[in-house]
Amino acid sequence: MSVNCLFCRIVKREVPASLVYEDEEVLAFNDISPQAPVHVLVVPKRHMATLNDLTPAEDHLVGRLIRQAAAIAAERGISAGGYRMVLNCNADAGQTVFHIHLHLLGGRPMHWPPG
Ligand code: AMP
Ligand code: ZN
Image (tube, rainbow, N blue to C red; front, side, top):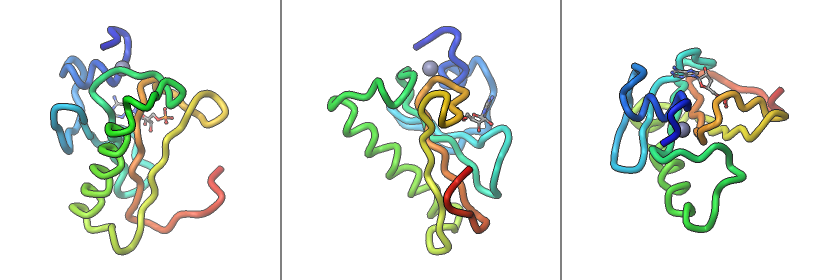
């Protein structure tokens, strides 16, 4: 855990969030500033700042993040229509919270390429 990390503080329940899912390794909550009708953040409970910190030891965890996001998409009824998963890394991608998080976005048509 990182004491000054917002998402670590959400994991520890020091900061409130609209929780969607929790298990021993993963937490999911609604984004505070949703960019689509469904906008859920899926995070590892353990602090890792960016995708650059991943090692082969996290391969299983990364799979869990993706599969949990897909399960949430199914629960929200957007699987067939489609959805997007986004992982931003560092400044050029616009990462603002330095605790790895997967954005699940859906419920509206989206454009490509992203901005
Ligand atoms: P990123 O730009 O990929 O780092 O995304 C960070 C995301 O965290 C943004 O979509 C924010 O709206 C979201 N966010 C920031 N603070 C909170 C919060 N307290 N609860 C839920 N989502 C948040
Ligand atoms: Zn953290």
